[in-house]
Length: 280
Image (cartoon, rainbow, N blue to C red; front, top):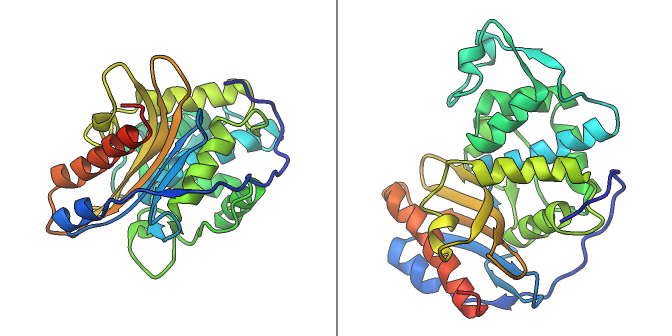
């Protein structure tokens, strides 16, 4: 998994998905599920509602960290630059930034906090550091993503409002592949390794993708949760031997559904996909 430095745009190669029927899981839980699994060995792509839009919630923070790494590579940012943390920066869920109020955190600390524990003020501070929402839109376009919407900061971006702050599961999987798998990824080898380590070390979402893979697999992932049903998880699955699998799962459950049930639906979809791919 070696990447090369530079942020030159490159169009994502088209992929031809094959349907995987997850209607039974949706009916059981009253959910709308978007799911894609891309086996990088066989090239098979399984998709259910892959071109529909889903609010992405905190899954975007993995892409925000990647965008910040590209700014570092271009000399526009420094990982050790310190950013003041104030009470005014605080929004809900601030496990890294709230203890730092009145002091400062390095850009790298903010990046790690957004990916590993999904700190919301850290994400907003990184967005502000790059100049707001437009540079984040430009990042997606620069990796060949012409579809993903970027409209609001945390935590407003989690609220359903038409197509605002939405992504398509097929596009999400393509973005993951572009950044974390492709030989010509714009991320340097060092920065890709840092991002993957944060995704692997994240303690969130143990009942989602992680619960759907066989023992011994490693999952580098980023979760997103809306707090009123949306329950997401995206990442790369590494078996003990063989090629990895990219997964993007967006479960728009009902507010009445329990967190455990929402997580379990993603785990079951992952398990079914691995069986279909002959990788279970």
